[in-house]
Image (cartoon, rainbow, N blue to C red; front, top):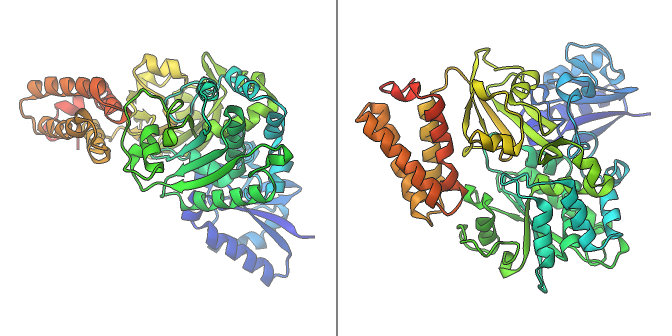
Length: 514
């Protein structure tokens, strides 16, 4: 009998040499006359252990981080039977980082071959869609509404309300659009899901189509995700071949077609109306609202625009029921959030937890403190437009309302940590510079305000007319927040103001902290 060996094909593992390791394992097994079955999986999300190799040896035993040069030694140690070796970590599920998680949306990621539809079905896939096919559209929307699911892309708008708006808007054509333009710094959960469990997204979008009466869907994917692109195209082709997409979804007589479209690298196309312009073949620019995309969206038709994780959460909700999902979380933040730990942390990767866990728990119990060993001074949550939080706010629970109360946002769940060597004036300047580079140019407060912001911060660094420029910076931030057309210009003041509020000493040093 052959031994099953698992090696990730996730972009993180590939960047660290997983392809060479997989080839080395196959070659070494052949040279020794040992029969193995190599399974390429998604990532388990423990990035410091990548490339991770797992072996079915009674239990599923992990070894990592593995280099190609380690492979002969692993065979010598009998790793195919779970043998002792310096890289042996035991069962991944028993690692503290993993064991304390609540893996709902990411339950299958890293477990099996993400492009094997039969493996997907055997691990619970398409149960949600089967249940949805037995329900009326309004009943599907009601289940999603009662689950408490909110948009995981950043705005946290209730998913069920958006779906009901599209359902109730009469039109001959409606669309489902997945916003897979994951461009925030420190975020990678969309990519991990698309590479590690693409059928889950396909299933979620199909359920959304059934719920609102849409027969066509588009995945708008950032061009910087070639591995996710290949995985999605392969999964969609297999879903068509298996009767899970097309004119007769699972023999129901219901139609749902699905395509992938690539963006061109513009951060602004993560904003839903810019995304729709780009999808229609135009330059990505923010549209005025109203009308909302749910009423007049893609090609002027009612459109559901949801993030990858929002849509990928739907199959479980339809499988297990609204109450099951709603039982996780706190307050109005229900379910789980895939949290992405990045920056200066000892242990980085993906942590799926129910809402309510604190920043301090994530940074120290999961992240292990700073990689440098120095004190963590600041954390940015929610991407480049998120506020910088000081140590005094680390006990804030991950909850949309709790974060809003301290002038912050959860966004897409990305957390970037900085130790005490960080220059917060430089971080504030980067926020303004990022906005200037990525602005679509449609509105003056964002286009011009961000450029003026860089200039004001440079004058502060030089010690020029300090009080006057502090007042000017505050006035500029208020103008951008109040008058910008979208969140890019409107939220850029948050990292600037929070850095100034909590780390003002860095702004008082001529020439900056560095």
